[in-house]
Amino acid sequence: MKNTILDLINISSYAGARADYTQGGGGNTSVKNDKEGLMLIKASGYRLKDITETTAFVAVDKNKIADYYNSVDLSVEKDYEKESAEISKNSVAALEGVQTLRPSVEVGFHAILKKYVIHTHSVYANILTCSLEGEQVAEKIFNGKDFGYIFLPYINPGFELTLAMKKAIEEYVNKSGKYPEVIFMKNHGLVVNSDDIDRVKAINETVNETIRNYFGLSDNFRAVNLEKTVNGFVSATHIVCDFVKANGLTKDFLDEYPLYPDQLVYLNNILQFSPDKLKVENGKVYYNTDEKQATTLDETLAAYLFVITSVKNAGLTISKMNEKEVYFINHWEAEKYRRSVK
Ligand SMILES: [Zn+2]
Image 1: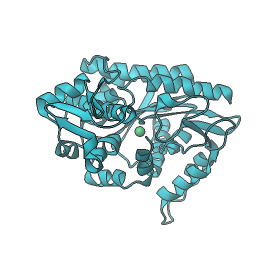
Image 2 (image 1 turned 90 degrees about the horizontal axis):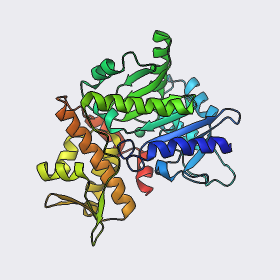
Image 3 (image 1 turned 180 degrees about the vertical axis):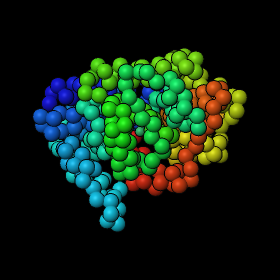
């Protein structure tokens, strides 16, 4: 188990080191230990880089979750979202010396994938997942690569997403005889999964680099830059400063362009319920809160503005979440929990 924990720290520190891959508590990683029947996965609300040998991750009975999705009978009318959340909760296994936490809200799909899973909200992948033409671009640039990929439509996270992903993988395998190590999720992000730890990281790099090269983007968005103020912090991140100086930033704008769940969970939610914490004044964005939350907000905002700007600059069409999808995220119990963990 010790090696499994070290593997999880390895892929998590890799994926969590850059703001263009993951922002705040977004994104998650997992590693399976077949001998023990367990899967280690990032805990809900934590950052990937918080993961150490004793905290920010949790062990779950991997087979319990996978079996549920393999055998679920959809002909019965019931609350599958609630039922699957219960299964995830009850699958948590205590590990000696490790804090017992709640697994990531995305634990379902991790359980049905290969041994190593890296799920990020990569800004490069999200140029494809948040534009109408993204799927066609993917076809063009990933054709001939040595990994298979699928492009999932937007599906509510949790139960529905796991089932849809499982089905899409099976269909892809049947059709092509190849396993899709890369999964693009519309208006959400990227999943890379493999049985080999070096390969999972290498493929993740290739996917991001291929998209960057295609659009002629640099990879210098790796961290945000905050300056201390009396009440908190002000953003000195180029992407944020440049955009806000030129266009301003209002709640109406964020409400009009809902791109993906984490934007709603972190940005729209803050402006709705704690508007004092995020203020735009004189072309600058102020975060009147502690450094951790300010960092999460600035990373999420910078990533969002990077995606919006890149889609427009590339001459593509923004693809937004619809009202029903936004409603689901705003009322999802699991997201309320995630928001509450700082
Ligand atoms: Zn996600």
